[in-house]
Length: 461
Image (cartoon, rainbow, N blue to C red; front, side, top):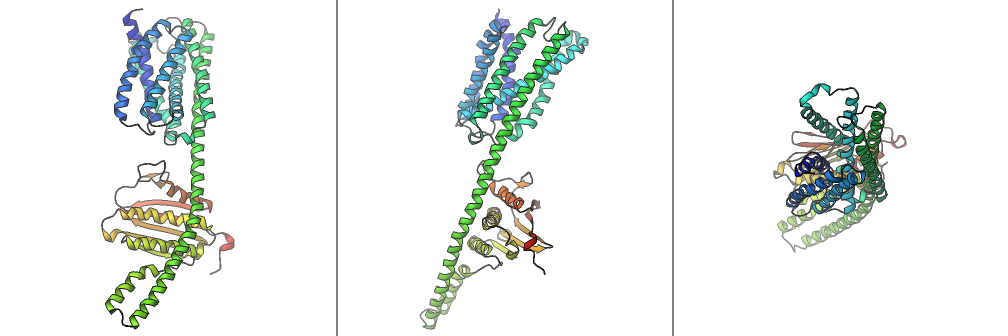
């Protein structure tokens, strides 16, 4: 074994595997929390990973024609990749191991799909005309095929999972099953690659005996199916766990909304009582000529905002909108309400408070960022028409609003813990058989909700 043989093994086999695995590692790990000095860590560890590939290439050149040697090489490369990924990302080792396992399963899937494709071509002598340019055409075919497969795997398995990969969503039993199935697949692949290479004639994966083609393709298909099962099983489990967590959180928000209503109701009632007491005392002082008329008018104006009540015909909405109007007054925001709260009597109090509380809070967050006073406006309308309640909210905004699945994305940096407000709105609306839509026209955001009134709650006009 010469140094040139080791270099050839390093460049064509080891480094190529590292690059392929690296691409999937980037795709699976990209949304995880990064450690301090992330760029420096990645740079140094990438160089170290490439350097470790040289002794691994020597080992492969010496023992890669044996099953145990082949298995050892890929286990070592996978283990090093997992440790290095853990050093770059501030996540639990369980999370990092899961992502690395998914990356390895994806790489192995693409590799097996290429072998299925290539072996099929060998059966029908599709490559006989390549002649002296065989290596060039092989490489071009290889890279084009891999690029197509990487894209397909991204859309099929990775895109919907990466934003949901967190420790709370990873079941340890799922992780154990994934690692075990992946290990069995790698062992079988090593057996196939070693022994079918010995059965090949002229070049690898070309056989004189048709039965060898059948056996080789059977092994390739089995390995590809195992990888697909791993990816499907893991991705579906992750999404289901994440969705269940969101539902549990949204239910908690609704329960908290009901509790918050009780607190707000008591607070507003207490404020109104105190305001009335102050008014009577002011009248008494004014009658006794103890305070000047101008000072008295200033005092009355100061407390008038606390004595204002919004009447909607629904006690809960009265409390909520009064509370929000006080906030708007203090922050120089115009809140216009034309609400027929009586038509929302069919909704549970927790749902109603959560729905309108989130709706207005989202609007307040948007208009508070606006500098121009005349654009700090929120319009809320609730009306009934033909047995349907129409809820419409409009507000100005600055900047850009991006939508995903029909809902505006949160503008906060940490989307794992924010963005539940709009989803809670949709969940509540769906609960009552309604529809929620949102759109943007110029610099105006509009939210429209349609809620069918239960038949028993519709009164004759």
